[in-house]
Structures are given as structure tokens and as C-alpha cells.
Amino acid sequence: MELYTEKLRPEIIQKRFPQFELGLCEEISEQGQWTYVEKGEKLMQGDNYIKSFPLVLDGILRISREDDKGRESRLYYLKTGEVCAMALTCCMSYSKSNIHATAEEDADVMMLPVNLLDEWMSKYQGWKQFVMLAFKDRFDELLETIDSLAFKKMDERIITFFEDYHKSTGNNEFRGTHEEIARALTSSREVVSRLLKSMEKQGKIELGRNRVNFEKLMA
Image 1: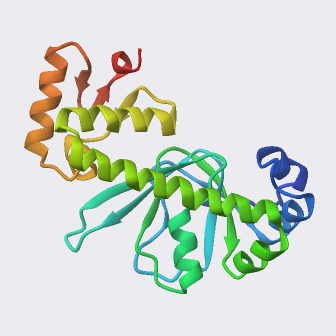
Image 2 (image 1 turned 180 degrees about the horizontal axis):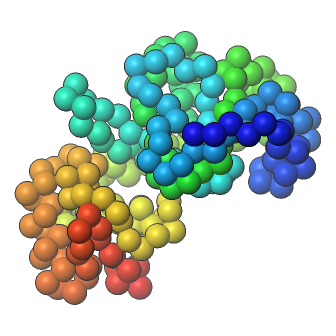
Image 3 (image 1 turned 135 degrees about the vertical axis):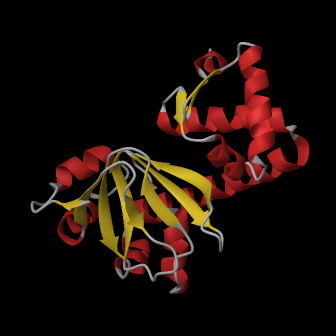
């Protein structure tokens, strides 16, 4: 992780976030810490109080939780132009973070002090709408997850997993283990591996070492 010494110009921030007022962009430039995170690096750790929260300028972060055995479960991806709703929730309640934020690919983020959150909510309409939309998007994803658990078969849930990954990252190849997919779908590695091999035999995907090419599913 690298902290840039120079400030990001307000006009560049406003170009990335056109809904933000110029005054807000100036405060983000002045108060935020422009940070570069390499793929695989952790930006936020669970069980810590959050002093700053990430605004993604470029790249993708993976938001996840860990159980008491250290097993990770992916919650969602945070992509360019988004803010972490769960981090904001911890900030608002002054509670310890229960999430991890890891760079899914190289990312530029603006780390913003938590004390500015409430002030900006009342001061800038653009920021208030941005935060409310972030909460709505995460809530909609939660409902989709519940629907998937309740109504979809496991092979359909795997396809939905790849569709969501493509939607978040733009990639047609998932680089990770079958265990990671199983944890994300609250299933077992054996079940996921069996279904992936079946999908490969049907010509829907191509399997490699720690990778799944699902380009044909997106066609």
C-alpha cells in the first residue's frame, strides 16, 4: 500500500463523481488521503474501529467477513465510483468493523476521515444522495442473495455468481479456488467442484488451476 504525497485535484474528483458539488470535491481533495493498493493487499481489517473509509477512484475492492476459523466469505465487490456501505454503517454507529476490504485488483482509493461523514450528509446534497444510493444498492443485493438461497438450485446460483462477478469486474474469468466459490455460496467445496466439472462437460465453462473461464455463459 502506498500513500501519494500530492493531493488529487478537485476537478479530477468531480469528473469521476459528477454528482458531487465542487465544494465537496475540494474538501475530499484536502481532507482525504489518496492511496494506492496492490492486488491482494488488505485495506481494512475486521475487529478494528474505522478511522477512515474508502472511496474507490479506480479498481476493485473485495468486501468480506471471516468466521472464527479464519475462513473468508465474500459479501460484495466495491468498484470504481463506489463507497463501502458497511464501513459507513460502522462509522455511524461508532462500532468496530466486522468486515475486511482487500484489493481484488490494483486500486486507487481516497481514504476519508470518519468525522466528516455526518457533516457532509447535512452540508452536501450530492453526498447525501450518494450515500443513500450505496445503502440501497447493498440492500438490493441482500434481497437478491436471499431470493437465490430460497428459490434457486445450486447450479443456477453458481451461474449467478459468475454473472455478478462479471458485472462487478468486467472479467469473464474468475481467478480463485473452488473453496472460495463455495464459501461465497454457503456450500461445500465438493458440491461446487462436482457442479463445475459437470458445467465444463456441457461446454459452459473451462476449468484451469485456480481459475474458471465463464466467457461462454456471458455470450
